[in-house]
Image 1 (cartoon, rainbow, N blue to C red):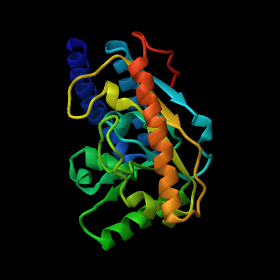
Image 2: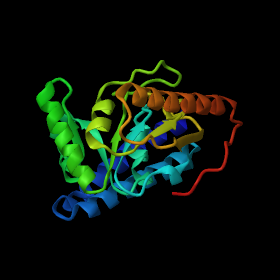
Image 3: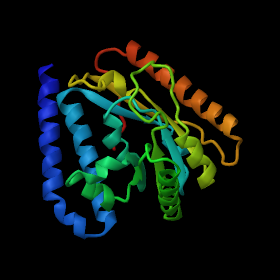
Length: 247
């Protein structure tokens, strides 16, 4: 637990330093700010590995399309909100709208041109979200959504929301399911951090144009089957884990 506490302290201190020292990037090109965001993520991943012994393994990255795509990722912890960033060319995450009003965090979210989501404001907010997502697609960016809307503990029954279906229908681009097991090593609502190997697995893209029910079934089956397999792997993992890829 001491290692976890040390990491948590350093994580928040270094994150604040990155934000404050990087504030001039708010006035530069977006690409510079996005590059700094990826550097921050890589640094925190290195810190997590060096202090706690939590490594990262990425599988199936070659399945990610070269251009714009919709990425639907399992969401088990806060880990993926920063650690997934370096795995993409130019990601745009869907984020709760209220986060955009937090000083520095919100300013940078706007600079990164992330996509605000206001789920409680009805059809008008959904249309606004879709307009923003279409703009990001025109720029060739990856649109990242957590289809369950919130963090779910490993092994919990799936609870997929309609937002991913709306985006899939409106954007007309391939959807890449992503499975992971981060919640085993970075539990939600906890300061505990555990040694081992977090696995992120990109699965076969789902082509655009499928009926809603078929799309949702393919997406759910792909993510849940792979995530269950990764959960079983993590439980069987020996101390020290498996080799991690370099990022």
